[in-house]
Length: 244
Image 1 (spheres, rainbow, N blue to C red):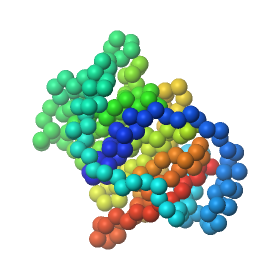
Image 2: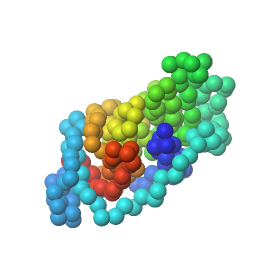
Image 3: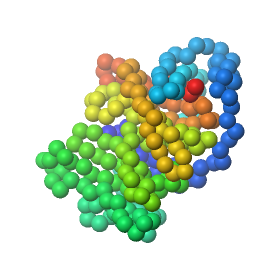
């Protein structure tokens, strides 16, 4: 669960910031050539999602700060205050006021102490870049994140926190779980257009999983490459991931 609290902390920090202007994209061939020239080495791993190939390269140094743990319950209050006219906590439900005058509801399980349908939802803020609300869902033996569309009320369940590419074409959702196997361990990839997302594909990784992730440009990400030893100790190293 600590991993997901850290992810939620990153999500809340992100909601306070406006997205930067999209940068000019670099041709894919040029991107791959530039990365190989910069690293002067072969990729240490690769994976594929839909028609996209991702090459993983070692980095000498990470630009991430250590992820801090966060009590997601305490996050909800300030976020609801910021969006009071659009989202409210009403008892065991989060109620989203939609632009069409209707409402979209995330309702907690009635008897979470014994019910395998256990579900508790927390509001995590409005994502300006994605033009949707973000929530965190905790279930019987798993967890995920959700986007709620403010116009249609459509609820999109995702493996992890959504990261929008600088050119606003793709959303990558990382998820780490090498220990319990209750959640997916890998990535989901979505297309993005005018506030709407479409799942392109997903990949489950076997030997490592993603920690913190961020886009560097339209084709490149920095990430934490996390492995686990036989003592269940997590080892983290910085990597660059190039999307082709």
